[in-house]
Length: 523
Image 1 (cartoon, rainbow, N blue to C red):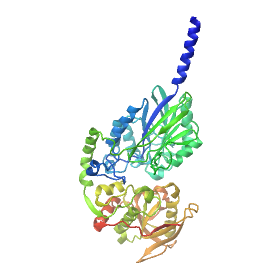
Image 2 (image 1 turned 45 degrees about the horizontal axis):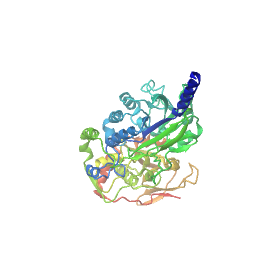
Image 3 (image 1 turned 120 degrees about the vertical axis):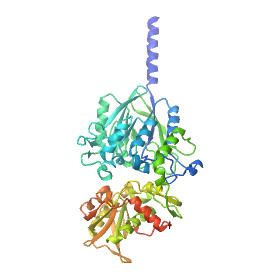
Image 4 (image 1 turned 60 degrees about the vertical axis):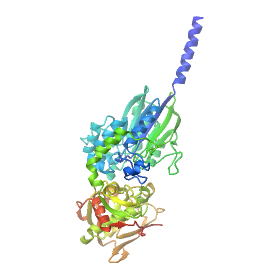
């Protein structure tokens, strides 16, 4: 009788163990925050206190604090992670660099983040300072940092954290072309994402970890490639392409999560406008049996945390005099949307390129080229403040003037449209120039009908002629793939700040109505 009881009890215990083996986890996530500590407008730029009170604003750190607390309360196990690019985007970053981001992320209780390309905008030193200030690991698997003293002993490829008695492996991933997109310096070698992730998965698996999450700042396309070409990755938290994945939002680029094989890919747009919330169930062997969720929009329905509102207001005080200065008026919204300025002629691109050219035309400069990825927001109709201009042009890029041949300009335009399908930031917005491109042709053969303004009319570009060009110092020094400009003649990279040039141009106009004039056409 006793033996039979013990056997039955053992069987019940085993059954209970099997039932309890399913492990649930909520992955809360953000990406591409870009220093939007204050609420943003529907155009992703600044939003006034009046509009915020009226319920017309989104995001901001104070809403995220509340939303994260509410989401944690709904879950028995949760983690909070970030897909990179906390840095750059508003005057807060210009003034505080990574210090305010570190403070806010610590307050929210992040468990890990990956390095985004913009984390390198001010070199390894500022990234290291940020890493020293945060209470969580910052990760990057696809780079050799052993030659960079600031990061060699600090920046890990992956880490293991525990939640609810289970080990979770976290791997970081950054764009392979970060050396073209930012300023990491000469000592870091960026490598293939698939190989890097698989190497870390194998290492973590060998340590007994069977739940693996990649924090990827490499874009939706690369994320799908990594998911398809690796084994052992359960979840990819995306970033870099500002991709919204959703099952309800009509602007979504795919479902939330996007499943590639057994891997769940999630991404929550950008600028703190959404908090991603993925609920997953794992079986005993670490396989996902269920993955559901949806990004939560940070609109007026989310109450702002009062202490955070006060702290951000305190941090904003030194910036207000600069930001609130009205520089011009606009009768309509000036379109600086990412999807516009990285794919076609956009009103903000025209404005900025015109401003650049106007500033240096008396120096014999004929052509302006501005990378679309350097344009970070639109401006709404009405008063235009310096703060809005700085949100559009946050990078502190300076005007660069130089001379190159017509053939080099065509080569630069080919580079600019070479990644059109990917929405790459190298897309060229121009002034003093017209061109046509055809994406049905292979990269390198897409540009035609290049015309340069000579006097009062456009004439075909002469490949052998030398032209004066103005761009920004990032592009002139090879950023976004514009390596053909590195050896330009008579280069001067230390002109005025591009935001100041644009603001002064707007001020001279007084009032502007944004226009498109056909300077860029697509076949």
